[in-house]
Length: 191
Length: 245
Image (cartoon, rainbow over all chains, first blue to last red):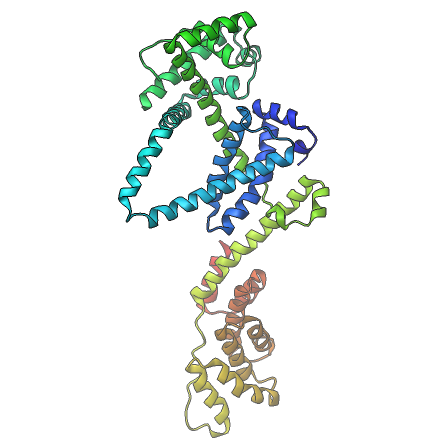
């Protein structure tokens, strides 16, 4: 896949942060089969492979976006995606195993889980909020969803979007604001 | 998210400018001061951040679903010889897609064909064995084995008879039947073909029918159709109509 090999790492980071469709697609498609092979070899199904890979892909995207991971080259990006997928699948296997075997020692279990919740309470709260927004955006009416996708995902400029919608910039801005209000309301209702 | 506050368009754009690093140094200084001194404002900024991340993440989630559906049908890249990578990848993908399409057509077709086969195939019940025909003792002795579904034993007994009478329709027909019942379809076909090529035989009609079924099992659909057409058994017509649709 040429898209990823011809450009240098800082360009890739920039393109990923801008959600460049060609780069994301190429990254997604050139690594899936490797992950699929791994999951299939380790008692998973094709569906498992897809789920775990998509989850890992979002994680990688998020970590590049927030500078938690800075790839040195394409290889390290591909390797990172593969490693995260692999770890997620191993975690999944372990958790299943855990559920099956540790039922007897409930006392210990309570102590541990108590400590764990305290530590990650904020993270869980944040994650719940994010899930709420995602669900709300999924359910948002199509015109708003379209507009907000253009603006926040495709990162098109206000002027470009205004042109596409055949509106002036001021009404587009106002429309975007009202869509954001709608999304916030929906997200609040979810919780 | 706190339902108790309302945000104006200006406030929203102000916070977005901060999140997207679009502030002048002066504006940024003022913003950060407010952020540090006003916990409510800080929460509001966090909420907008979550909102923007949620939009992007959900949009990406839906996007990668389309990437997945457009995934080229290649085998795992580890199985490709390394030279293949230097070829034009898209051409290779297109070729692979064709191969897989044809392959899966064949595969699924094959599945339904063998289903059809097992739906209609029942071994020929064999000939009645009487004690009177002494001269054909070996033949009828083997027929008893055949009827007991001991097909290999029957074949072993019939085989020497066939070397003496290679054109015998009865022998060829039951050799074919026995091999077919054993699941050795290709061997069965060679015997049954012989029967159908004979000018006259009481077994011709049945031979065409079982030969058609054997072709069907071997996924030779066109041959199966041709052969079944030449048998006037009721089941031949039923299978033919199932093959047509």
